[in-house]
Amino acid sequence: PLAGAARGAGRGAGAPHVPASPPPPRQRRASAGGAQPRAAAAGSAEPGELIGRALDFKSEGAQCYKDKKFREAIGKYHRALLELKALLLLLSQEPAGQRPPAAAAAAGLSEEQRQAVEAIEVDCYNSLAACLLQAELVNYERVKEYCLKVLQKEGENFKALYRSGVAFYHLGDFNKALYYLKEARSRQPTDTNVIRYIQLTEMKLSRCSQREKEAL
Image 1 (cartoon, rainbow, N blue to C red):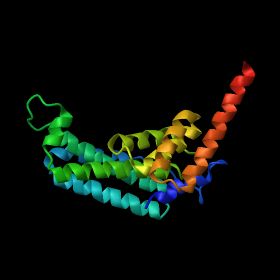
Image 2: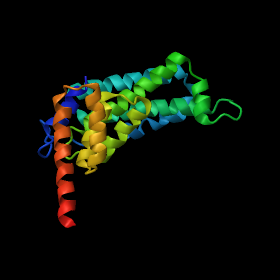
Image 3: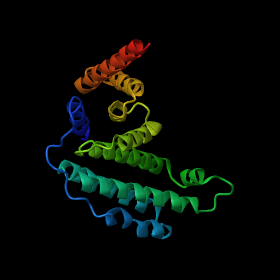
Image 4: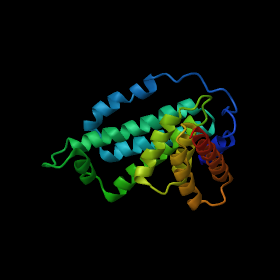
């Protein structure tokens, strides 16, 4: 459902990216901060309840994205991730011997719950990157950060590979951009946006190489 954002990023490769409509007014920061009481009260919540709330926020974020309310969507996805942080906090406080917090947290979840948590994280970070790519001034550093978080869990995730390449391209790291874009192309060889960015990146690398030769 978020492939349109990646395609939007691809269309803006040759010129400054301009969204279809101006971004909505800045979402009140209380939307993210307001989740803190929930996190603080995590001790009284069950893991299933926290996972359910995270799923609800993720679904609300997806609807905001469909409605082109990108800033609101970002707030919802962050709320979903805060619920998962509250879950890890809850489980890490349970008696678990000398195990580190992450191991204690994993031990406190069923296999189905662990898979649900990972899927929510991947979807939220992918969706956050998609939302950021719709901004008038894109924070490519943050896009890169979110995409790499996805790739830590799903190394073959096409959207994260493609958007990582886009982010590195706009950050001026053309070698890394080419690596991620080629990885994306190996998953979807006919994707025109990936092909276009590979061409743009190779042109940049060729120019850089030519300048280096001229400087010698």
